[in-house]
Image (cartoon, rainbow, N blue to C red; front, side, top):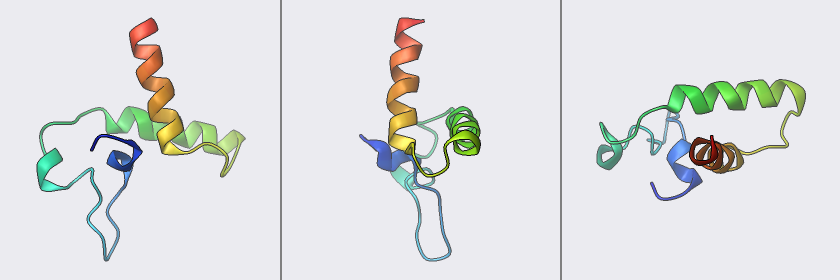
Length: 64
């Protein structure tokens, strides 16, 4: 959970870090990051990663 992998969702064969036991009830705000990612994907599909969005969000939350 110390990098962009915290943004990984579950799949049929994989438990993503969002729902992994160590992160349960310790991280919040995924819906905000997911909404930002969806908006960016509409304009620039496949260009910006969740890790990029996470870095920019962290920066802007401190600067704002």
